[in-house]
Amino acid sequence: MASSSSSSSSASHGGAGDAWLVSFADFMTLLFVFFVVMYALAVVNVSKMEQLAAVLQSVIGGIEVKQKVEVSISGAMPLGAGQPAAIVLDKFPPKVAAVFDAADDLTQQLKESGLEGQIKADQMVEGTLLTFNDKLLFRENSAEIVPTTLDALKQLAEFINSVPNEVRIVGHTDPAAPTDPRYPTNWDLSMARAVAIVRYLVDDGGVNPARLQAQARAEFSPLKPNDSPESVALNRRVEILIVNELAQPKGGVNPLQDSGGDAGAEGAAPPAAAPPPPPPPPPSGH
Image 1: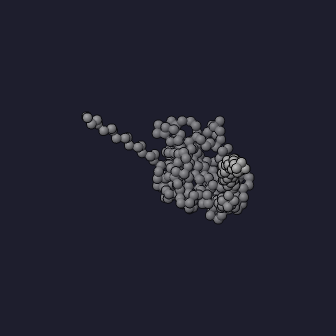
Image 2: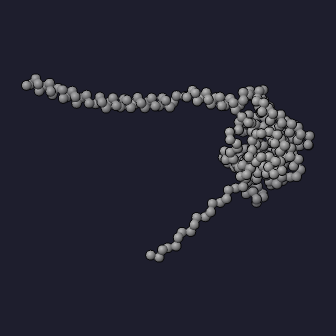
Image 3: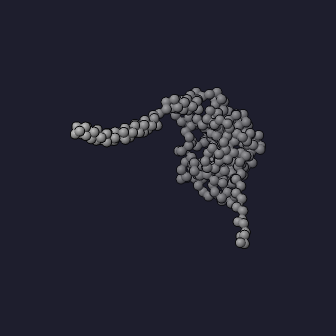
């Protein structure tokens, strides 16, 4: 009897002592699963990276980037810090080359029109960038187009109509506050100037408005520091970007794709204010 009692007691003690192994095994299993999940999250998806590389290569079009080279009308100032660098392209798709050739023809025509030094063209990965001095286009502190520049805008419209690309018109100002009460801030002035160009291109130039965007940058994208009258004058400008076909999004222009002052040709007017909430109901009298 003593032997039976002793073995029974030993078995019961052994069972109780081994119970912790179940919890420990569960803990180790969960810990293993946790590290497997963490490893899976950290491992780079090679196939997705290859797809991304292929997309980037198609956007750039197999071009070779060399030293900065500008295609400019004589006397124009070079791009300043913070602006996309101009590049020289040894190889690019034929459609992109056609846009570049048309831009070169436009700059030559404008040069022959006596606008030397007031318009500059740069070839970049994003597209062809045309920069217009604000004095060429507008009255001082205004978005009214001066009549003397209508011939240049007509040639610009003909150039835009000759290519299928989307076009972004971006207004820039200097830091000085506008003096015209119609433009409370530089955002208003730069947007009004961009919209004025868009409206001319649509109404008088026959450009499809679905291809156009009007954007405002106010004084926040200067070509040079505003530390001299020459630099301040340089920063007051309108930029017209003829977007490369490979770099533009599928499905057309999205007027709201860029934050900040940005609108399509048909969305230039600011949104209407929301109606006021209805008055509360009168008391019931109970």
